[in-house]
Image (cartoon, rainbow, N blue to C red):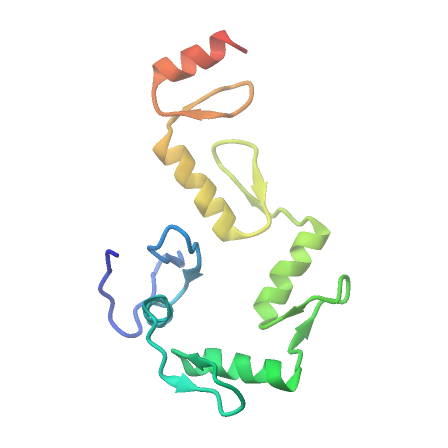
Length: 153
């Protein structure tokens, strides 16, 4: 696993979230410190043990969330579907999905997204595949592939 080196409280100044480098994960973090703790969980570093069961966590925050489950506490509940979420931000983003609020629009094609990180992932496709079909907006890595696609439209 390739590691990036961060200072303890480093954050991206341009407000981009830091993606976990493991391809099977996909989680993102605003703070390098949070990513570092997350990577410790992937490595199996388990320091804090639950006093109510045998579970252990790499961070105090995760242990507090675990203990809330023992107590059956719900921090943030969606009034539309009754799903419970761990943070107010997660609840706000979840409600956007119900309302189909797609406030983040791509400046290259007409696609819109509910969450900014979804748009950022989408924008990488435009950077990696610069040739776009004007009819269906599908992206291609070369002009030749685009021309082949256009011939079959």
